[in-house]
Amino acid sequence: MDFTTASFLYATLKCHEIMEGYVKHQFHAHPHVFSVITRHLAANFVKPEESQSSKQAALDAKVTALASKVDSYVSRVDAYITREKGRRLKPI
Image (tube, one colour):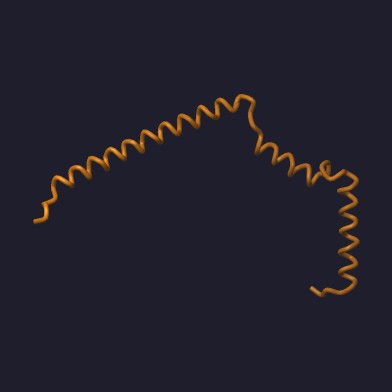
């Protein structure tokens, strides 16, 4: 593309024309911006039944389940270490 004075002047005037539409709608009410805001609000909407206490209870349940898994792995490793110590020959 040839970057001439005319192309810069055209781009500047086009920007002013587009900006006029945004200012006319006070930015947030412009159709391009409004659709993005609406999608954002829909994606990040917190349902009323999802209170902090229910979220906390769900997280507590997950943490408890993970803690019991870790405890079972630790006990299996401890049993393995104990069993291996009995199998090894003691050095002379």
